[in-house]
Image 1 (tube, rainbow, N blue to C red):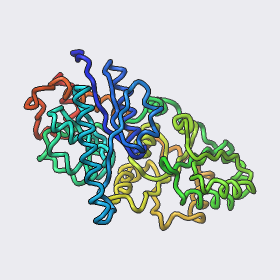
Image 2 (cartoon, rainbow, N blue to C red):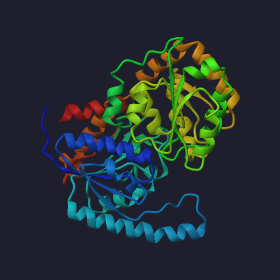
Image 3 (cartoon, rainbow, N blue to C red):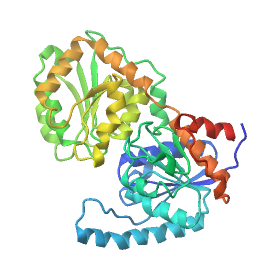
Length: 393
């Protein structure tokens, strides 16, 4: 394989962990390959800056048109324009080999600035439904990388190049998939990890402790639970668990998710793209409750493949209640093989090489910097896309 010259790659991501964690995983891979990496983000993305060790971080202005009245949309325009000019100044200073955006409105100013400067560009879509910002820009960029083969709202024949790379996850989570699933027998501890996205989810704070508090004492003694809660919910959750025999750890933010995921037998959470990708890569089954107000109901779409193939269980927000969850947990406690089988099915769906495959796409763009015609590779079949990149290098 030809060793590519090193380049300076810019990541454009912001907002929530669903956009930031894939960017983090790609950064780690690019740094290992010897590239320089910079991150252009928004105010919310700066919360994750400690994780991006080795990358230079810049902040630009951004704003969303979604779910705002006419006045909100009008006020968003100058923020977006200002963000584009800020990003343009940064890119002119850096002179990157390629820019990759991870969707959402925080990535828009940087991708738009890169297009104006004719810097090779790539969009990565984490969800199983192409997001609105990515949908708007997909025809203009040089490459579109998808996490799911059956991603909705994708116009395959209108894009310059499309590849299914998967959704990059951190190396520590990839390594979990190579380890044995923790032993779960009739009398052994049953470890449950409850996550609700980067901000926690109120429904889990209400349902999970109520459900486990109704279990027989013998079942309670087997449980160990680590649960992420919102600040305003944590004391109420603690009070409910205090009357049980369960070993519980409550936190508002899980600092070391890979370690928690490594020892867990089951995960209860939303169906964000990062959650689904991390579970399947690590080989962990999940009870998934999609966020009901997600745009285009993309969380339900994210979970579809995992659930269809027996890697977990799906409940809509309305039907997820303490009585239902208690019955499910008691059944799993009595039939641990059901959980083990779901873990195996989950692992089979993982894409542990997603960061490497996405890095291949980005490297190819950087290699042909200055010759945008060479970037255009129209209508490559999805199943051949990632291999096609490696074969041509």
